[in-house]
Image 1: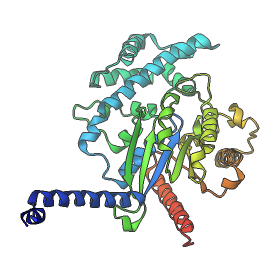
Image 2: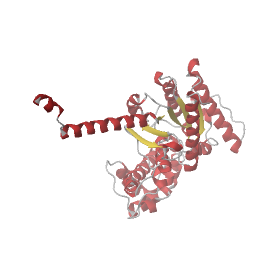
Image 3: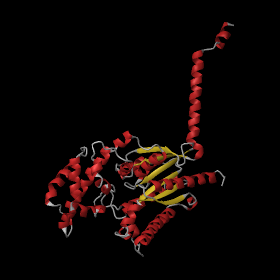
Image 4: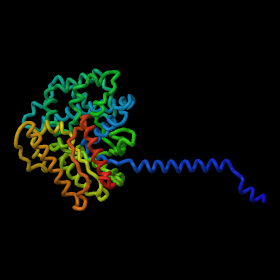
Amino acid sequence: MGLLCSRQRHNPADSEENEQTAEIDRRIEQETKAEKHIQKLLLLGAGDSGKSTIFKQIKLLFQSGFDEAELKGYIPVIHANVYQTIKILHDGSKELSLSLADPSKFMISDENKQIGEKLAEIGGRLDYPRLTKELAHEIETLWRDNAIQETYSRGNELQVPDCAHYFMENLQRLSDADYVPTKEDVLYARVRTTGVVEIQFSPVGENKKSGEVYRLFDVGGQKNERRKWIHLFEGVTAVIFCAAISEYDQTLFEDDNKNRMMETKELFEWVLKQPCFEKTSFMLFLNKFDLFEKKVLKVPLNVCAWFKDYQPVSTGKQEIEHAYEFVKKKFEELYFQSTSPDHVDRVFKIYRTTALDQKLVKKTFKLVDETLRRRNLFEAGLL
């Protein structure tokens, strides 16, 4: 009798532990269900394709953006961009003056040579000083030098970053003692992505009932970063592949002998052929159109081996559109050549993008969201 009673005796500690276990199990079940409703997007592309700018735009557009602490965190990045840029231009002018038939136009004026050497030394350091008014004035003086402007005009040969002109024209503001970067400054700021960063968002709103919820992964685009991609390939709803179409006449940062567009072509082809992407939707962003439309009227597309059969047909806007459509068709052909016949029904869309244009990025992601929602409805038999 005593044994029977002792077995039925209520133990408060055991009861509390059971309740905690049950609550943990409930939370795990809820989180698992929530995870199933989150669409996984993978942002891929070669280095300097604009992936990270797209990523920052998503944070600004569909999340709370950057708080003051985050904005201030970009100050050393932006100042580093300034020093790196002026060093590239200074060293580039020397290089061009030695290798070209007319070296005189790349020779820095005597009054600016000392400034140039000083700034090149700073630009070669591992730690950069904060940008002061004095340093900003010296950088501005060197930037205005005719030799540096000539060098900048040949920036495609020297790995001059896209942010160069923007930061050089805003030096006085960037050197203010109480400087806090603007959203535009952050978008222009250039820092190489290493490892993996992710963000969760909805193009419609945070309320899951009002639209799909996406988790976007951004990874480093340089060759040495790509080994980190593989573990992210499973369970991907869509790959967003960024191709910088303005870089058809440029070489890789990590390999001066490799054309950037050829690298993008080979990378896109490789990604398309990955077995885990057989049913994955592909969204191709033909990015940096703003730079492309300025360049294509000066530098013919056929300087790139992939575009060697291109023939200009007109001038101005008509020629820009003709050149863009040619590039677009090349990517379309590559897609279908690299896709096996039984997978041609996977979603493939091409978008013309400029990562720095917030309105265009917002419109593009609304279209991506609509495309993926229709795909989900179709697969569920509701369309």
